[in-house]
Every structure is written in structure tokens, then in C-alpha cells.
Picture 1 (cartoon, rainbow, N blue to C red):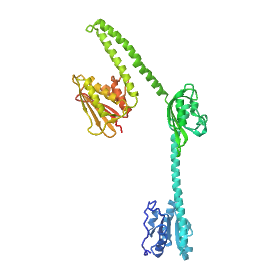
Picture 2 (tube, helix red, strand yellow):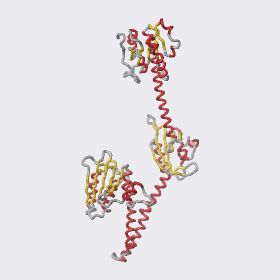
Picture 3 (tube, rainbow, N blue to C red):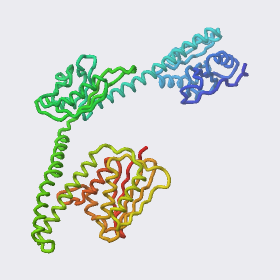
Picture 4 (cartoon, rainbow, N blue to C red):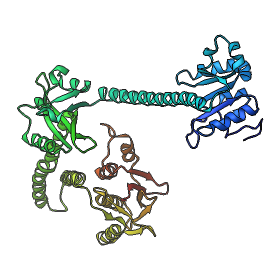
Length: 493
């Protein structure tokens, strides 16, 4: 038994939400003495107990407070304040009174406490009454936590619902168990996209958007993927309610439960009509440029050759020379466009060791340009593996430009491969030529206009290859003369 005046148990500090062993906490607000000590010993069998005469401890953490009648006289208003603070979660207070002083307790005592216990009291009765209050307290805390979690969950669901409702893409949810995958939800953007109202949509399969010009191939892909419970993405011709057709990018994905069973399908729709028209236009223009234009230029070159034979090499008029040069430039331009298209639209590169590839390229350049000097610098440690579509062609284009646009009889090109980090590799190509015109550089940074445009499509090709890979292409004029090209590309990991 602890001596009178000694506080028992471990003190609970203000702000503690749980004790290390999760035992409920009892605060004994009593004057030091034998009664407090005996009461603490009884309660410590089931609870963590703090015994004190300091009413400031009412601001601390506890699950039940037992107040002696002498302390209650001074602490009553603090008790009332603490009860009001914890109003949303039950926090019990118990007043201990002696039998001879019970009648003198304040008439409004129940405004302050939840139970009044006369002393002396049997240990079993005391424990039962305190246990009941603590159990109510713990239940109240648990319910409050669940309500808080429920409120957070509801708020999160409401946020997600608003995000879905207000998403800038059409969104539908279909029920695979409803026979023919009927739509059970469609957001506002889907209604705007298709012109159909909710009453027109719900309960129907999204195939009602298809029409006369809807191709069989995307239909088949959609049906096959849905039947197999797989994700799919297609570009398909659909029709709005007013009959206007549009190109629709449709992405469908299954939603599965914890057992892996498909419970719904979610579909995303976006109008890509402008993109499809632009793609078709580029296809036609590319065909005209690479095929029709080249055929016409071959005819012009043929007649120029006949005229060259007629006049002789030393007697050609200047106009014929200019026509011959212009024809060669146009044919070269058509070839460049075709090469760029082939480079950018080709399949993704397999992983290549850039250091080994660069050694092979430099060897080829030495043979192709014997008058030029090529210096290659590679990292001393680590691999230089990349998987960037068209990167080899881009590097070749950069090196060829450095030589062919250099007026020096013995041009020099330095090629440096630098491993900047685990994620990035820099390919630097520096020459000692006259430097790329500032107009060509500014066009890459700011875009072309009808008045400001680039003459070197090769620079655009390098830019597109690096940008497609998510990298950075930088062009810098060197003050002492020459140009530094930097291709920062992601390393393969």
C-alpha cells in the first residue's frame, strides 16, 4: 500500500490519446490521504490511475474522473467546462461523498457529474459502477471515431463524385450483368458530347452511338475485349443525337471486386475529330510531297539534263544552273520529309548501348568524311543504354549537319556522351563551323510563323525525336565560332 500523499500510477499528459498498453485512464482528483491511496490500489487492478490534488490536471487526458467532495468545491466550474468541451464524446465524472454529507450536496450536482458514490462502498459495487461508466466512455469514443471516419469517407466519395460528374471527358459506367452491358451512369460531359439526355442513355448499350460509317474493326476490338474482361482503346466513328458524326476516342476498362470478378465497365470518351482530320491531312500531304512532288521533280531534272547536254558544261546559262540547283534542293527536301516521317512513326527502338553505337557511327563518319576530324568522348564507368525511338538517326543528322554546313576545308566535330545521372544521358555535338543562324535557333524555341521559319528540317527532326522521348534539345552558338547541340535523353533502367 502506498503511503498517504504519494501519487500512484503513471501520469497522463495533456493531449495523450492513448496509453502505451491502451488501458483506460482514471483521474483521482482527491486530497492526499489513506482513502485516495486505497482507492487507487483498487482501481489499478483494471486501469491506469493518476492520483492528484491538482485540479489543473482536468485539462489532461483521462477516461473517467473521480472527484473527492473537498476538491469538488473548488473544481466544480472546471469540471463543468471540461464536460462541455467533451460534449460530443461522453466523458464521465464521479463525485465521492460521505454518507453524512450526502444531503448537503448541491441540488444541481447532476449538472456536473454522472454518478455520486457514497463512501464507504463495497469494492465490487465501486468497480461495477466505474466499469460501467468507462465502458460507456470507450463506446462513445469508438462511435465518435467511426463517425469521423464515415464523415471523411462521405466527403471523399462526394469529392470523387463531383470529379466524375465534372470531368472534362465523357464518362459512362455499364453493368455487365444487365444483359448487353446497359449504361447505369453517364456524366454531364458525355451528355454534352453526344447530345443525348440521361433518360436517353441509361439502360442502353453505348452501341447506340454507332452508325453507317462506323467501321467493323473497332467494333470487333471493343466486343472482344469486353467479352474477355480486358481493357481496350479504339478510335471509332460515332453519331450524336442530331445525326452529326464525330471521331470518338473510346477507352474501356473493367472494374473488379476483391475476388477478381468484373462488376462494371467504365468508359471514357473524347471527341478527337480535329486530330483525325489533321492526321489524314498530314498523310495526304506527306504522300504528295514524297511521291507526287518527287515524280514531278524527276521530270524537271530529266529535262534539265537534256538542256545541260545541249549547252555543254561550260556554256550553261545562269538560269539553267539555278533551275538545276533548285530541283536538287526540292528533291532533297522531299527525301528529308520522308526520312523524318519514317523515323518518327517507326516502332520504338530496342535497347541500344549508346557508347558502342557511337563508336560505330564515328568509324562510319571517318570513312564518309575523310577530310573531317571526329573526336569521341565516352563515360569511363557505367552503361549508356537508351531506348529512344529515332535517336541514332537524330545523332547522325546532327553530326552530318556539323560537317556539311562547315566552310572549313578540315572541319572538326567533337562528340561527347555524358552520364549526368542514373536517369539522364547527354549527347553533346560541338563543331567549329560558322554557327547555326540565330533565326533557326529562335524558331525551335518559339515556333514558326509565316515570316519566321527554319530552313533546316534536320533540326526539327532532332527536336521531335528528343521531345517525343520526354528529353530536352538545346542549341547554343559558341562565341569563338561553332555550335553546341545537346540532346538530353532518358537512360534505360
